[in-house]
Amino acid sequence: MKYRDDTDQFLYEYVRHGMTPFFGVPSVDSSDPASAYLGARVVLLGIPYDGGTSQNPGARFAPYSVRQASIFAVNADAIGRLSGRGAVDGGNVPAPPRSPSAMRELVEHAITGVLSAGAAPFVVGGDHSVVLPILRAVAKRLGPVAVVHIDAHTDTATPSEFLGGDPYHHGAPLRYALEEGLIERGQLHQIGIRMGFDAALTREHAVNIYDIDEVAQGVRPLMERVRAAIGQRPTYVTFDIDAVDPAFAPGTGTPAPGGLTSREAIALVRSLGGLRIVGMDVVEVLPALDHADLTSLLAATLLMQGIAALGAPGEPG
Image (cartoon, rainbow, N blue to C red):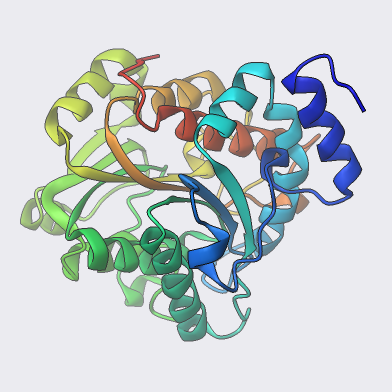
């Protein structure tokens, strides 16, 4: 069959395949990462796990929903970005829903496979507890990294602040990451916060908090400060979708009014261009509470912008 251009071929193969990989990129068998990810610069993964949630479960369905919505985040320019970055879909990490320790072990192993192949993991959770094993894998390979954390909450709670269950819950991954030395001191940058923070922990680890009022003063000047502070350190990006106001992203288990607009969220991720990004996740999408796939489509768009930022010059919003 002849195609008018690369876009036609891309869309035809996407439809013909019958499956729904992220953005229609090739699906690969991740059981042998060294072979499956050979030549890839980006590996997209889903982590269908929500055993760390404190309120509404259902984020385990997000990888499926975001995959389906991702085709609407693709245009001719995006196709060029994906193909130029050697993106592949490595499938889902088969995380047992009721075994937090097994989830952490499996996720760390999966991310290690991506990093060992020289690629950057781009992940759709799942709840935010999945980020701890991701950061463990990243830090084992690269040492302590800078982290850009976009969220309504600081996610530095203690086990006693969680109503039962696993202490490594979705409200605590950044606390553990700081305490385990996975994040370089002074290089946790928390953006969009509006639900309080642990003052003692913030001082101890020199955490940088840019609350929602600072975002409202302008994404451009804020992100100029963030990029200047990080420099060329390896940087991991973790985006909790509840950073976005529920008017724009209703599909999340812990909605927090007064958040980012979808335009501000996209501008924040676009503004990461120029940083040495080593991976990214979007977490806490809950399809059952979504409307018209608004949240899943935004999550896919944020991932696409993160991929575009790899190796790109600074592009503040």
